[in-house]
Length: 413
Figure 1 (tube, rainbow, N blue to C red):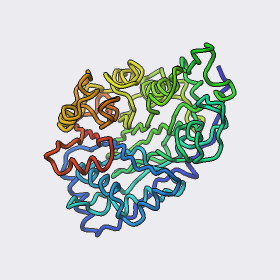
Figure 2: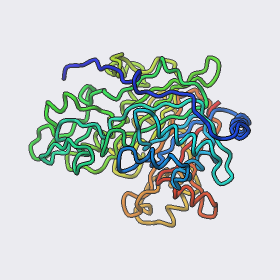
Figure 3: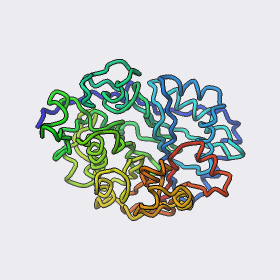
Figure 4: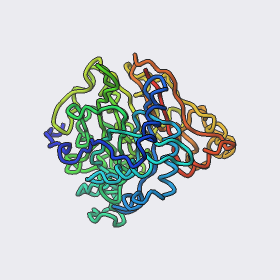
């Protein structure tokens, strides 16, 4: 067992939880809020919006004028679904939160194609491991690349990224986030997970990573967040947000396949009593989720229960966790149509295409269920859906322009 460390927090300096600045007219903002108020329950949603750019600062530039076509499409998808609590994956992080603020002000708060603006008084963003230099040759190519943006740099970062913060994430909320109780786990070391599936080099039988690299190697490819959201008097739901690495782009050692599985396992252990004692957060506080706490696990988890390249049983470990209600399976008609039209790998899939959430390459791996909103047992579920319109719906072209993922939503209350 490697020695344990207490890590300083980055929350005080870099976590952004602010009142949003809206440019829409007050009546428009009130209309969006009223429309949500007419719906029973609280809507949680996750959306891998692919709002990432190839160079640092480009997303801020693209969002500054309010005329970026992709961002407008993403905003319209969000406005058509009107979630109360929204996790956006693949949203480039910057220390000042400029991109997150610009997207809210110039896109979400402005009606897109007749959709009503949507307002979020609260948001949360924090650093990601993507693009953070590790100091080691993590992909085993014999080189350690230290210059952001240079060929090979992303592969040697703690999480794949050409620069710090690429492919980050942000949460927008209509309800207050309890900042004093937020926990992040960005610095948790992979080797500190009991029974970690650390990769082994097949040709030698030795560990793929050096002992020195494992001293600092972080489990989370982006971060893992526990955000307590106050949805009413005495009612708090913990948003457990993450975006595990894709189980691909590696070699016979399966370093990404294994890491993906353990990133998912982290949440299964965190929410299960007496299984999360080994976990420590970025403040050095140990232990899993408080017994009895209600939660929703959200994010692009990059694992399908039946198809794709993830480790067998990787997502089942979370779906079958005793306190997770894995029986709620959002569905969308567009996924069924897409699988039929695209063919390829989809024809051989085992899983129901109505549950697919990502429109991937038809030849390989085909469309998959990788995005999840999983409630804790005991939370009353009113409705759920994968927002994947069929091709006869005008929104089909909008969803295609927004991202290769589809928004997934769950209503509780």
